[in-house]
Length: 332
Ligand code: PBG
Image (cartoon, rainbow, N blue to C red; front, side):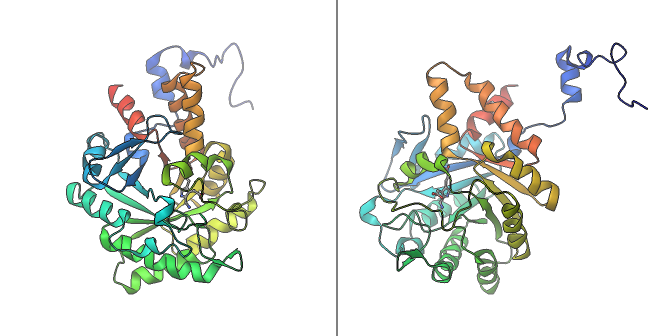
């Protein structure tokens, strides 16, 4: 029996005819509660500087961080993800800045927690914003050394968690790091600190504007293909996610976003765990560049991309559009 019926008894356009029916039959919704806003911190005082390659995105000094997120908080955005800008001269081979309990991330976390105790703080764990070579780990004979890196990442995670970061987000793609970080946190009594792992993170060309934003552009030697995933693969993403869950990840992430909707879909279908998409810098800049040329409508392109993540199964999205999308959602 044809359960769905056929034309002319069935007219698919009936439910699309009016705003109110379209609303009733919508299968997915986007709310401010789905959005995580990445923000860039920079040294100095009273600073707000634009990121050239990301129109509308700025770096802020810690003293202005609370003011910077105030509107996002009032619009109901549940969490922000912090990233530090580190100029080349402040970097070294081992990324020691990551362990400084007074670094930008820790100071930023303390300032934001003090101002907004209920705002979730997500802290990126990886060494690329601290190393002179721009890699996410430490080099031994030219190779990013797994275990040596993981040991440093654990200490980096502890410093952040103690400063008030609620969610440790390892973006480095070292093997075994989630389990090691979980153990380090637990041993320190930080049992409530969550882990959102960048579980399926691809070696992507779409991170270029981000590297500009954090000061890594001139730094990176080579590429990250020995640790980030090959864009050709998707079964491998499931193995990565399975491992991270077994090691104690509370939430997993797929990154980049739109070119990898199939991965989000598979991860959510296979594991049913809280799954997040990262609509990365290049995706943001691509849309903004077209908007600036008048080729795309900003609000429509933004909202269409964001609902696509929900449709694919994501629980939420890290996006540079978070504030603008939340504003639009509020205005109706
Ligand atoms: C660092 C990190 C990167 C991003 C988030 N964390 C860059 C990279 O892996 O090279 C990219 C985010 C973006 O492009 O918006 N490990």
